[in-house]
Length: 296
Image 1 (cartoon, one colour):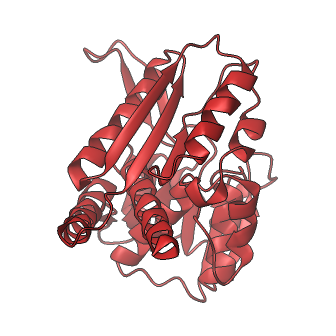
Image 2 (cartoon, helix red, strand yellow):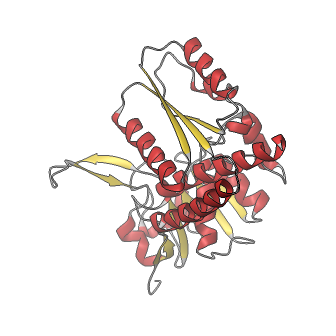
């Protein structure tokens, strides 16, 4: 059993990144450059989605970005939403666009995502940006995998040549993360999911274990080896009568069981979530600088 573990403090690293971005934006603006501009679209009044968007707006304010929030009723038609996206696509002042998911059932998330211009797609979800992950010159990478990679690097965790087990194969996290770790970071990657038989036989082999299934407490202490690096992407709200809020947040990893065996582990919350927002800011800055270079 590992003697101690280090918390992969996503909140701390995200704050460091925000400070770096704020400094760079200040330098850009001081010489007459353009302030990066992020637009966010929120459809409906889902409380969780509103919180996510508000956190992104607060982050924009902190780093000196301009931001535009467009809030539409849940009854908006798909055609009308797409027309609003096209308007933003054609607005040269806006560098990045995010559409907060999920969308109402009558609107196709896939169709809406593909309407965003790849150069403004700071979530990294369009097919072109997604496909370019396999390029040596990727575009705007999916925000959560990008954030995880940045978190590992900021803690100087060796990736090259190590065995990374990815539990979860979603389009937003698991699939792109496995490509990035294998193709760009030269790890040996195994991709599993909640239907994998004898899952513990794979997770016990992991030097780096990344879990993104949305199934709270999936990974137990007896499913990992000593010294493993654990990144828990899952976050599920569990109702309880034991605190004033009436709920608590739980990850896909049983923290109390796994942490004593780990060398590094993310907390939930405070691990991956803040890094996703930091990655959105990094992508927006990258998009803004690229647009400025092309228009120069």
